[in-house]
Length: 394
Image (cartoon, rainbow, N blue to C red):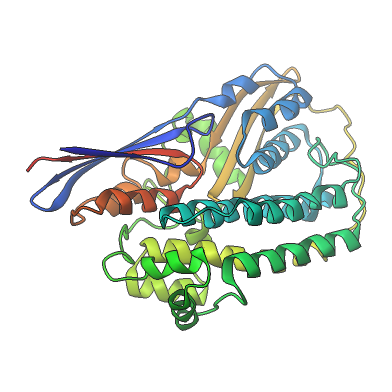
C-alpha cells in the first residue's frame, strides 16, 4: 500500500524532494530521500562578473536576494574588491528577505495545514514593509551590484519600515508580544489566537512534539572560506556536503539552539517538530530588533573601486537564508567565470543520511504518518515541493 502527498508549492528551479518510507511491523524500516534540482550554477559559467550578477536574480526565484549577496561576495573576493562598507546594508537586505520567507510559511503554509484559510493580505503587508528597505538604503536601487551601490541611508524610512514589520509580526503571527520562554509559549499556544498559535498547540502535543528528533548536529556558522575550500576541492560537495565527514542540519533551529525557549524544547523533546517551529517563530519575533541593530551601524558609502588588476582568481561567499546557510564558490579565468559551485541548505537537510532521513527512521506508523512527515519536510525546508510515498509491507 502506498500513500503520496505533495507540497504546497510546485517544483521549479528550487527543485523538489521525494521521500519514500518502507514500513513493517508498525515502524518505518527504511527511508529514501532524493533531491531533484537543476544545476543552475552551470548557467553562470562563461559569463563575465557583471553578466552573472544580472542573471543570478533571474535564476533563483526564491531567496533571490540572499543568492545575489552570496554571489556578490564570491565575485568580490575573486576580484579583490573591498565592499566592507556595505556589510550592514547587505545584512539588512538579507534579514528582510528571510523575514518575508518565514512569514510565508507561518501565514500561508501553516493555516493550510490546519485546514484554515491562508492569510495573503497579512503577508502582503509584511512584504511591503520589507520591500521599502532596499530603496531606503540605495535610492538608485543599485545595492546588488559589484562593489556595492551608492549607499545613502534614509533613516526615517528605515525606522518606519522596521516599525511596520514589528507591528505586523506581532499582530498577525502572535496577536501580541511574542512568547519568550517555554511556559509563555504553551500559554500562547493554548489560547490559539492566531493560526500560528493553533499549529504550535498541535505540535506541542505528545507524540508530535518530538517527531523527527535525531542526533544529527547543527551546521556550525563557518565562514565563506571554509565552504570555498571544500567546494573547490570536490565538486561532489555541492550535492553531498559534510561537516567533519558527517551530515548536519541548517536553518532556524541550528541558529537558535541557545535561545532559552528553543533550548527548553530541545531538552524536553529533542530536535523534533516543536523545536523546529519554535525556532522559526523566535527568528520572526526578533527580526525587528536585528534590523534595528544593523541600521544603527549604517554610514554613507560609495561603490568599491575596481582597479581591474585581478582577472584570475577564486572567491567564496556565504549568506544566511530563512532555510539555512548558503555558500557560493567560483573561479575566474580571463575575466570570465570558469567554474561555479553552490552548497545550498536543501542538500544539507535532505541528505540521504541527513536530519530528515535519520528523524524518520524507526518512527511508529499510523494513519497520520504522511501528514507528520510533510510537516517535518516543511520544517526543514519550506521552499521546495515534496512528494511522500509510504510503502507498507504488511
